Image (tube, rainbow, N blue to C red; front, side, top):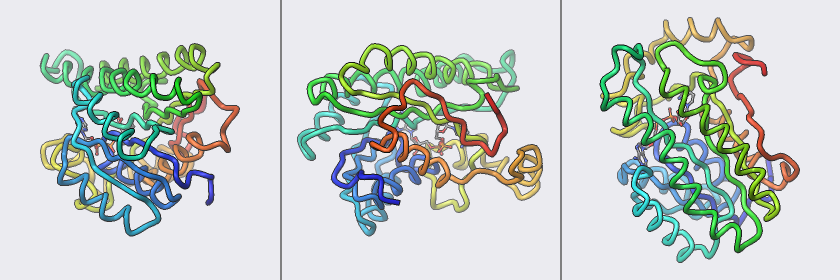
Length: 265
Ligand SMILES: NC(=O)c1ccc[n+]([C@@H]2O[C@H](COP(=O)([O-])OP(=O)(O)OC[C@H]3O[C@@H](n4cnc5c(N)ncnc54)[C@H](O)[C@@H]3O)[C@@H](O)[C@H]2O)c1
């Protein structure tokens, strides 16, 4: 698929693991300059090596999306290295499945910091450059939880709902500069291989997903989806690349579920 993304500069937050990794490699295979902005430098560097074997020019910049100074420094490094920011993919997210009344305060704060402040910090940090360029595309990774609510994900769902609302509002505010913002909502998307995730991933040993990623649970979830299979990280990468590209140049403020028909709205 040639989407005209060759030579475009793309920041992918959390680009070291699972969905972010596949998004990074999708852009790399399109010939983009890819900045993997991940707190886990070791995992990010692994993806840099994979991406550079495709057509991409990839670098990893260690970034904490919850820290505005760290994010500003990452955007500066991107512009210093590649001269522009054409695309931002707000991919970092985190949850631990637990009932609202059983969740620890620190878990709620981490959900808000990574899912909401992360998106706000990174979006704010690229907008000055995009406005000056008079072009740009921002794709944020939401969740169907943010569209319809989800058992054991109250605050996570609230953050993802906010990501959708912020996206629509900013699409109105910055459309005049030819900057587009859209959201992609994955369904359950588990890594196929432990090498595809690092220690900070929800699917790593400390995340809730590690105990979930079994053949039995995969099969049970797949049965509840109209397309009868779980999504792959590559399914998300393709949708993000499309929305980021000029092929979608009249699409803004939209939310696209890539979840095998789990939600239809
Ligand atoms: N995987 C799913 O089933 C699923 C479903 C719906 C939505 N989503 C959303 O998709 C996105 C990606 O999910 P995933 O499963 O690939 O996540 P993941 O946990 O596997 O990977 C997250 C990545 O972000 C990095 N990271 C963590 N904290 C960071 C920080 N403070 N600053 C920078 N990087 C940090 C991690 O090192 C890791 O590489 C998230 O926004 C998630 O909410 C995922």
